Structures are given as C-alpha cells and as structure tokens.
Image 1 (cartoon, helix red, strand yellow):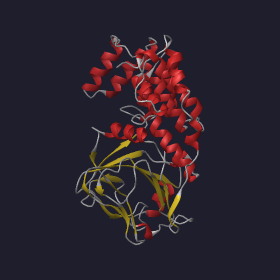
Image 2 (spheres, helix red, strand yellow; image 1 turned 60 degrees about the vertical axis):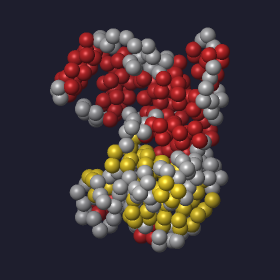
Image 3 (cartoon, one colour; image 1 turned 60 degrees about the horizontal axis):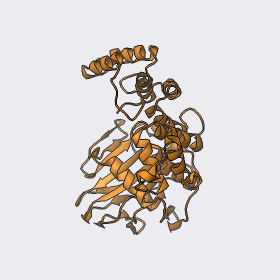
Image 4 (cartoon, helix red, strand yellow; image 1 turned 90 degrees about the vertical axis):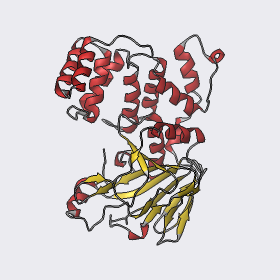
Length: 358
C-alpha cells in the first residue's frame, strides 16, 4: 500500500527506478532516484527517503534528516509518514518524548487512510469491531471519536506492583497490559521470528548458541509502532528511567521443549576489553518482561540462586535488576527461561541500559 493514502495508485517513475536499483543491489543509485522524486514533490519519495535515512537502511544513517523528510511528507498529505512520525515523537528521537503529539500524528495517519494506524487506534480504544453504522460521514470525525476513548495518561504511570524478591529486586505488575495489547504484539511478531541470538561481547556481535533454542524478533525504529512504544513508556514510568536508555523491544517465542538455559543479562566483566565496552555501550541494568499469554504448561522464569521460579500470567509485567547501584554485575541474577511442556509461550523482553541505547 502507498504511504500517501489507503487507496492504491501508480508509483512515480522515480520510485519505480529506485525499486529496480535496490533489486539490483545498486542502493546508492536508488537513493539518488528517491532524491529526484523529492525534487518533484512526490510524497512517496519523501516518505521512503525519510525512512531509509532514519535507520540507515541501505543509506547513510541520518536520523535528523530522515525525520525532516517525513515531516515534509506529512505536510504534503502523507499517511504512512504520519504513522512513522508518531513513533519518532513518542520515543523522542530528536527531542524529549511527546506522547500527545505522537498520538495526534497517529490519528492523522488514520484519518488519511493508513490501515495500521486505524488498527492501533481500535486496539487502544478496546473495541474489536466498529460497525458501518457507527462510522460518521466525515472520516476525521469518525477516527477522532474513537480516539477520544483512549486515556494516554495511564501509559505514563505504573499499575499496582508486588515485590517477588527484595535483593536483588524482582517486581511484578499483574495487570501491566490488557489482553488486546498482548494479542496485538503477538500478531506483530508472527511470521517474523528467527532463531534467537546471544550477544558475544568478546567479538562484538550476536550469534546463535546451543544454550538458546527459542525464536525471537526485535523491533527496530521502522518495525515498531505506537502501541509497542506505549508499552515501553509504561516500563519507563515503572522504573523511573529515561526511555532513551531502552534497547529495541524484543518478542520471544518458545515452542514445546525450547528454552534459554542459565545465563546473565548483564555484560560479563570477564569479557575482553570490558571497561571500554561498558564505557561506550553501558551496562544492562534491568530486564523487563511482559508475559503475553499463559495458556501453556511449564515455561517458568527461574532464578536458581534465589529460589525463585515464576510463571507469569497474561498481561503481567515483571522486572529484575541485573547490577548493583555502582554498575557492578549481580551474579545472583543468574536465570533461565524454562521450556513449555505443552502449548507455546510468548513474552516481551526489554533491556534497559546505564546510558542511552538509541
């Protein structure tokens, strides 16, 4: 679907040439064709170029310039651009996070016919189906009327909590997200799962490992959406830590027999050049989990050195602190994601670092 409206239309010659160049691996030439489209005031070219620069996708990583191209597309009636900007504003890519402005961008995307934005507003409003008779003859009025049902302020505060363990701190939020939010995240992850990776700090990259047999998917800036960012926003409120310290949100999936065996989430001080790694990339201070379903047997989160074995309920938030106040790793946080004996397990895993992770 085009980024400017829900209806399909013929792509400009510049966009077609850019796609042909990308298919042939000539990505620099593809960017040049998008620039040519921008010069012709093509909204689709503004949007595509903005997205590429935002994350450095087969193009230079220039997030500020990418956001500006998306703003230009927004001003020219772009629908997808408005949805991408909602994520930019909610996360604070160029300024402090602004959920209200982000919400307005998402509503704009819905009004302009962008289906993913419309679906998110319906999910957040808690209504699975809206009949045609509920639809106003004026599209903007219709989507704004649904949006009024959403209380954004609840996402900037934490629900009631229960401490599972005091030192190291392990805390549970039994009602962190609603069932429709869990279903949304699961559906976003389906079809994109790949073998889960382990970060090897000694070589500075991720790799597969025999200790981890489950699958996962991480949402980068273009993969994520406003709902996922709201979940992260609530995590930030619960932890009282800046959103910019969050790594990409990851969804984990376990089939029967799949697990993550005993491991630490902090950066191991025994890895080569540990001090430089911590100085440049920071320590993983906190791990925040959100259980997306509970219709499986087994699959507990276990801390063998603490005697804690926890099976989360659907919609529950759960975090544990991986390091001491001075940043030293806390080896008591050794933990494992046990294998389900029946059913399948879905869970969000979010790492929060000691310095900005963007």
